[in-house]
Amino acid sequence: MNSDILLLLQTKAPTFSKGQRAIAKYITEAYDKAAFMTASRLGKTVGVSESTVVRFAVELGYDGYPTMQKAMQEMVLNRLTSVQRIEVANDRFADQDVVSMVLHSDMEKLRQTGDVLDRMAFRDAVNAILKAKRIFLLGVRSVAPLASFLGHYLGYMFYDVNIVTASGTSEMFEKLVNITSDDVVIAFSFPRYSTATVKGAEYCRSVGATVIGLTDTRLSPLARNCDCLLLCKSDMVSLVDSLVAPMSVVNALIVALASKRERELSKTFNALEKVWGEYNVYEKQDDSV
Image (cartoon, rainbow, N blue to C red; front, side, top):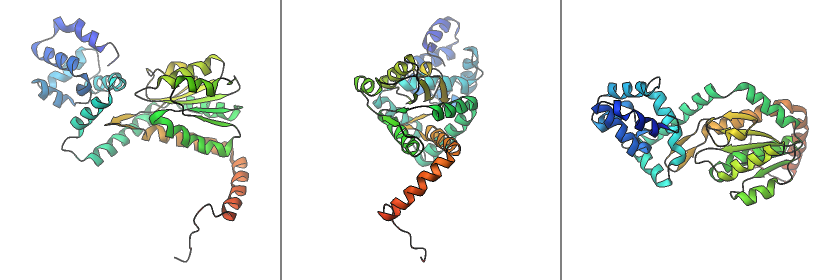
C-alpha cells in the first residue's frame, strides 16, 4: 500500500459494501495493527470472511491481499512509535513460539532480499569502493553496528576508512565536511529512518561523492540520494529492527571485495599473524585435546 492509502480508502468509500466499510474503517483507525494481520485474522477482527478481505484488496488495485499487506507494512513501519512497536509485536507473537516466529521472519527477509537485490548495482558498488580514495560509512543508532562491522573488515583492505556513527546532524556534517568526488560513502538507513543519515548522504552526493545506500525500499528517504541502491529487507520485531538480511548483504560486500584484494590481504594477514602470535592476541588452542 503506498503512502496515500488512507486517501484512497476515503475516495472509494461511497462504493464500499457494508463489509468493505468495516475493513476500511479498521485499517484507517488501526493501520499499525492491520498491516501485520493475515487476511483471515483481519476478517475475523472486523466480522467478515477472508474472501471478502481478499476481494477488497483486489478492488483497491492490488494483485491480492499479500501485495496490499506488504505495501501497507512499508508505509507504517516508519510511523510507529516504540510503544506501538511493542503493541504490534505482542499482537503478532501472542501465544506463539517466539523463537520460531523470529527465525522464520528472518529467513523470509533473506529470501526477499535475494529476490530484490540488484546484482548490477552490487557490482557497481564493489567497483566504486575499489576505486575510492577514501571510504566513509554512515550508520547511526540501531544500524551503527552494520557500519562498524563493515568498517572493521574494510580496514584490512583499504588505508582510509572512516566510520561515522554520530546521530546528530551537526556532528554528522563535521565528519563529512571535507569529503570530495574521489570518495565513496556507504550509508545504512532502515525504519525508523535517521534524519542525520539522509541529510549526510544528500550532502555527500551534492559535492560529487559516490553514495552507496543499503535500505529496505526504493521509497526510503535515503534512496533518492544514492548512486548505487542495495535493497535489503528489514523487519520490526518489538523494539528490535531485524538486520539479518542487511548484515548478509554486508557479508557479501566483504567477500566480493576480499576476492579483488586477495594479494594485499594475504600480505596484511601474514604480517598480522606474526604480531598476533608474538603478543598473544588470541588464546592458543591445544591441538592435543
